[in-house]
Amino acid sequence: MSDPDLKKTPLYDAHVAAGARMVPFAGYHMPVQYKDGVLKEHLWTREHAGLFDVSHMGQARLRGDNPAKSFEKLVSADYQGLKPGKQRYAVLPNAEGGVIDDLMTARPDDDGLFIVVNGACKDNDYAIIAKALEGEATVERLEDRALLALQGPKAAAVLAAHVPQAAGMVFMDTAALTAFGTDAIISRSGYTGEDGYEISVPATEAARIWNTLLEDERVKAIGLGARDSLRLEAGLPLYGHDMDETISPIEAGMPFAVGKSRREAGDYLGAERIAKELAGDLKRVRVNLKVLEGAPAREGAQIADETGAVVGVVTSGGFGPSYGGAIAIGFAPPALSAIGTKLKVIVRGKPQAVEVVASPFVPTRYVRKI
Amino acid sequence: MKFTKDHEWVEVEGDVATVGISGYAAEQLGDVVFVETPEVGKVVKQGEGLAVVESVKAASDVYAPVSGEVVEANGQLSDAPETVNAVPEAGGWFAKIKLSNPSEVDALMDRVAYEAFLSTL
Image (tube, rainbow over all chains, first blue to last red; front, top):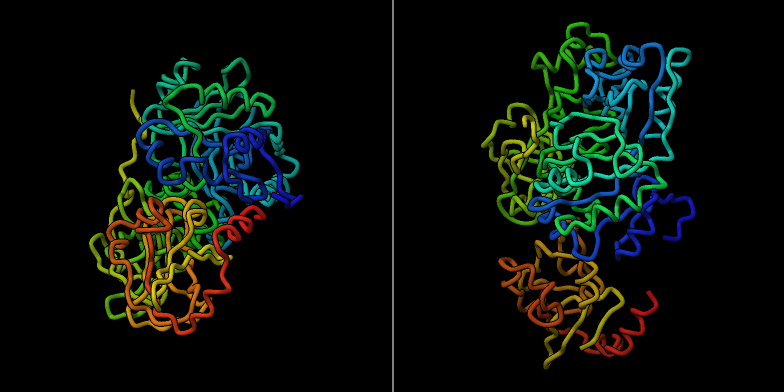
């Protein structure tokens, strides 16, 4: 906690008061866990509702004559076709078809686009966007806003008590509205595989809203440790690990990041590689691995075939508390990626049996219809 | 019971030391989900890696607090790694080491000294 360059989110004091273990993450002091610990926090979120501070993430407004058209010069999604009240996932590709960042873009109102990017990438993202769109669109960083995520099977009932409109939203709906007596942007989405919401509120109101939500006995504060194990079980890639400047969204198993109209037009950075990969010309693909014996396989562990030849690497791995065992995400040649394929992971020099399994590891529970 | 600055403990009976991690270390690690105990017969030097303990989030090395030969590993931990959290300074032991240099034990901290050390962290 002595690093003077680390920033604090508007909820820093609340985390410390709650006994959180604070760690440096994406340039911020962030709670990796509270008193219950990662395992219990993970399971609580799957059974009840978890409240996460994700204010380190970058929130911004993109404004211009036609911000969606402008933004499409940089990202892979169809944003001109993004309807009001909706949000959509995209990647910011580089010229080689790798990924500079992955992000969500929403149209909660008429005020341009609302974008949410990864905390560790935000400065670079904003610089790239501002430079590329100079003269046609502007990026306003919303540094005065906090972002909370309320996730889990009880999230909808909890939020409906404060924000009745939230109950009428489905997965990937977004709305700018008055909630908790202030201006909020709420989307029904998240990063745990559960139903839930991400709630953007003014920084000055964040602690009050955080504490209000925690007054509900179904809600507990959950740290980034459980956020990581929850997203791993949900099969969601983590930028900088399962997706980076060398890994394409197609390799990473996120083909929906490239919109249909964009595929047809081929008018995005890296389109040459991505079109080839969409046609099936892939050197490696993301695999989900169930560890059948031994220790958890973590990032950096080599993946080998049954003869012992190294064929790939683990990019995220650990213990899945709801899955009830060690799981990992990694990359392997397409010929070794079919579900049921037996492979090995090398952990501390020892080969251990793993099997390719379907994604997600734990069924997702997004509410697509009400 | 004696302790190291790396939060291992040893309890000596005759020429065999039982080794584990302290309650403080177990609490810091959080929920233990896997323990890799050493093979019986392995010869370790003080300060070398002896075992690996894994929480949901990370893997941590456990260092040999004393030199010697591993004569027994705690087999219970493969089925019940949570024992390390439940009773870290008793049933959650990792291995028994036959001491090759018993004087190493004398230089370790007793509980009072270890608790004083913890208060400086």
